[in-house]
Length: 170
Image 1 (cartoon, one colour):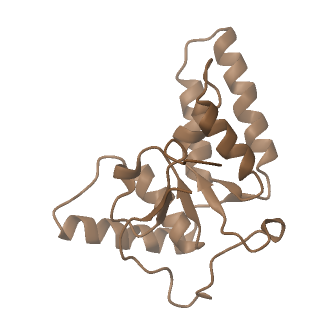
Image 2 (cartoon, rainbow, N blue to C red):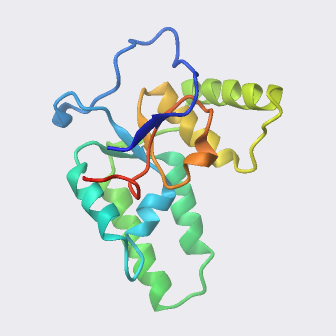
C-alpha cells in the first residue's frame, strides 16, 4: 500500500498513542477517505484500481463531516437534472452507509487544525483549501490515515497519506 507520512505533527498528547481501529478491522488503522476518492466512484468510467482498493479496504474506511459537506455541496451546485439526481442518491447512500463511521469536526480536531495552520503559516506555506487541513486535523485527532489523490495538498500536515491511484495492489 502506498503510504507516506506528511510531516511530523504528533496527535493529541493526552490520547492513547496506539492508532485508532474499528473492531472489524482486526487492528488495522482506520482510513478517512477524502472527497476525491469517493467522487471517483461516481464517474461514468471510474479508475478500476481505485474501485479495487476501496473494496479491499472497505472495513477500514470512514467518512468525516468535512467530506460529507463537500460531497453534498458538490451535488447542490450541479444543474438540476437526471445526473444530479443520480449523484444525490449516491451521496445519500454513502452518508447512510457511513453512519457510525463518520468522524466529526470537534474540539480535538479544531485544536489539531489550529496547530496545522500555525505551523504552515510560520513556515511560509499557507494553503488555499482549509477543508483539507480540517480533514487532516480530524485524522490527527483520531489517529487515522487519509486516502487522497491530492497528497500534495496534505503535505506536511502530520498525517499518514495513502494514494489509491498509486497502489500497486489493493
